[in-house]
Length: 132
Image 1 (cartoon, one colour):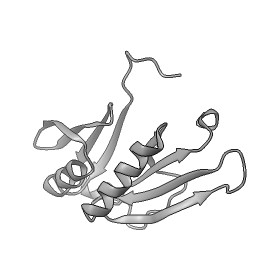
Image 2 (cartoon, rainbow, N blue to C red):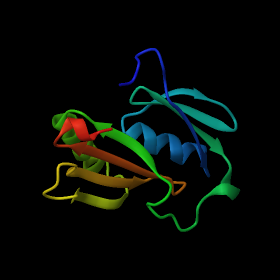
Image 3 (cartoon, one colour):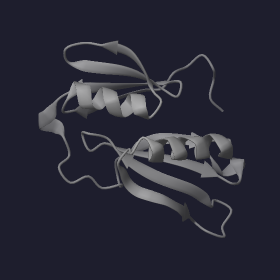
Image 4 (cartoon, rainbow, N blue to C red):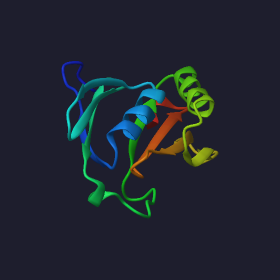
């Protein structure tokens, strides 16, 4: 299990700082720092840095192999985020679905797409032991 004294860090490209800031704040992330070339967010306890690099934007994003996100251990928290995404009219890449239905690793998942075409997956496993 994760140690509380460690924070995961992810750096991704963005094409516009203002658009990116609006998206992540609507998602519930807190802006930690803003510079001329990057934004740093508290992404549910981890650090996501969006570097201004319009040339690196994936023009035709696909779920595999590259996406990132959050796995919720509490279904209520997952549902709250899903509701927030819907209420904020955040762009869905893939609406809510069930993966591996009927199997032990069954989970709920949905994907959002940020303004730079980065894909974010949010999921909840019915069996917490299947998270890892």
